[in-house]
Length: 220
Image 1 (tube, rainbow, N blue to C red):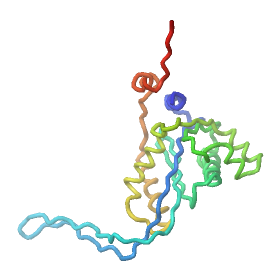
Image 2 (image 1 turned 45 degrees about the vertical axis):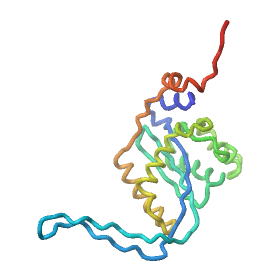
Image 3 (image 1 turned 30 degrees about the vertical axis):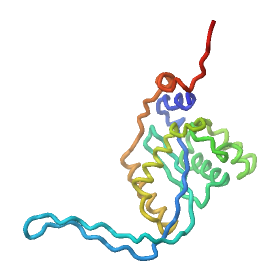
Image 4 (image 1 turned 90 degrees about the vertical axis):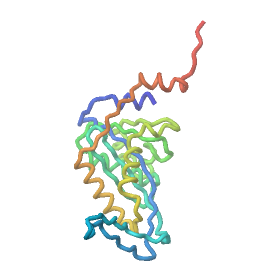
């Protein structure tokens, strides 16, 4: 925990971008019946306001499979990238890492990466996906940091995924293409607004508020 908090305490440096990575699954559901369009609110002749009728969706649907959402979030720069992939295997993770290194931060000296300790998250996945030379090249471009077990709240990408779920993913997505369009629109809008995170929880506060997690040392 203190290792991750120390990373968040560092000032912004474009040469060493701080990136949080997390992933989630999304179920693809298509409609069996076309939704009924609602009606906007309007004023009656007597001047009273008629309430709007929302879109009405049938409770039945068809399962079209699942896909994975990989969130790459740079909190100090207010920049995020969501990659939609068919699965969330170690090979998918490795491709996301290469995209981060070569497409998002090609000029960075080193990328400071914060992620949870899922079994696919690590340099070993790079060696499963690429030849040793390429895997080593990518591995050395990253400074690896992991949140502790049951400490995923320390990963700011998880918070960003929650915002994505509330603002974009509540509606049914009938296809992966539809999901990608919705996610791209959300991503562009949020990046354009420059939404950042001001992380204020420091090591000193952690040692006080989470005192129960630290070992008790008795001295004579």
